[in-house]
Each structure stands twice: as C-alpha cells, then as structure tokens.
Length: 311
Image 1 (cartoon, rainbow, N blue to C red):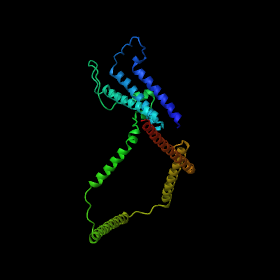
Image 2 (image 1 turned 60 degrees about the vertical axis):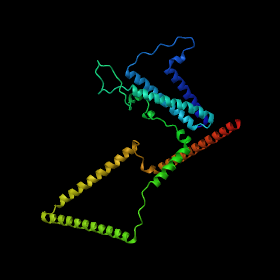
Image 3 (image 1 turned 90 degrees about the horizontal axis):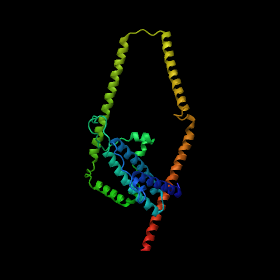
C-alpha cells in the first residue's frame, strides 16, 4: 500500500481512539462552567466484565492498526508520533486485561447461591467467546499484536546476545572422545555384520517353519476339489465386488470435483500456474517491504543528521 493509504488509516484510527476515550470518560464532553455528569449507576459483575471486555477488544483493534501504520510509514516524525500513541494504547490494553481478570464472573459450578453476595472469580484465562459472537468478530481479533519495532530497534543487542549464546553453547560442551583406531572400527563392523546375518537367518527359519506349517495343514485337510460352477460363481462374485468398488470410488471423486472439494485431474497445469503467480506475488511483496524498510532507515539517518546539524 502507498504512504497515503497508511496516512488515511492513521487518521481513521486516531478518530476512533478519540471517540473511544470520550466514551470511557464522559466528563471530557462537559464544557467549562457546566455541572459534571452524574456518576454511572452501580453495575453487577457480569455488566462490568462485559463493559471492560468490549473496551479490551476495541483497544486491541486500535493497537493492531497503529502497529501496522508504524511499521509501514517512512516519515520519521510521523513514526515517532505513532509510536508514542501505540505505547499508550498498549498500556491501556494491559490495564484492561487486569480489569478483566479482576471482574471475571464465576463459573456456574462455583457460583454462590442467590442469598449470598455475588463475588468475582479472579482468573487469568477469561472467556470472551460470547462477546465475540455478539460483536460478530473472528477469534483472531483477540491475538495481541507484538510491535515489530521491539525487534528492529534492538537488532544489534539481539544479534550480540545470539552470538554470546552460541559461544556459551560451544564452550560448555563435553570434551570430544578420542579417535577410534582401525582395529576397533573393524571389530565394531564385524559385530554389526554378524548380528545382521544372525537376524536374517532367524527370519529365514521363521518363514520356513510357517511354510511347513501351512503345507501340513493343507495336506491334512483332505478336501475334495471345488465344483467348476461354484468356482466360476466365486470368481464372478469377486470381480463384481471389485468392479463396484472401483465405480463407487470414481463416482466419489467426481462428486468431490463437482462440489469443489477436490481439483480436477486435468487442472494440474492451472494449479502450477496459480502457484507460480502466488510465489511471484509473494516475492514482489517481500521486495516492496524490504524497500520500504530501507527507505525508513535512510529517512531516520537523514533526520538524525539534520538534528545534529541544528545543534
């Protein structure tokens, strides 16, 4: 996407954030000299939990869009402003998560009877499925986006730490064993070969015994030969069963192809073309992302040089 697209996304997100802040604190809408608004009525545990759950989901959506804007913008001053707001929204998300844990309603199995006062059940794992269903949002909405600048701003420290870990792993290893001599290697090879030959002989003896057992059972059966008509009927029965199974499998594949759950056999070329196009698009997107990151680095360096010149 272009820079104007992310600028528009930033403006829309800031407008939503401003609206959300005024919804949370209605005293901001009161003009100077007007009486303050009345305090909100006392809410139950379920009402408080639903209120904070809606706020939590809304701030997560705002945080995700701000993170996308900060990652894609190339203007250094704009990125600084977006980063400041993003950190504030992140803090608010953490506060709302603590509020959800505090006002988590108890499960029906541990809920007190009606005469007893209702108490919250502070538990870290809150259930927001009903809220997502009411808001018609997918489960991916609850995924907390980790800002990518955490890794980009600390790239040098992370690289140095990884090198230190590799050095510690290499230096903390056990001492290598001495090289095996030729006689020891030959002895190991001979033992393995003798074991392999012994296993083969055991399998051969087992097969011979089973064959002898089957031959003995066939000789002791002393059955008369099957009639020609009965043999022909058995052959026809087996052939018809095999033919019916093949026909059922073919009809099943045709039905899957018809309802779109399986690609047709002659569409392998089209699938390869689509895969090639998808791969090419991914490469173009990756190249555009790298180009945008390089432009961000260049603009940041130019901004830093301009600040140094002003000093």
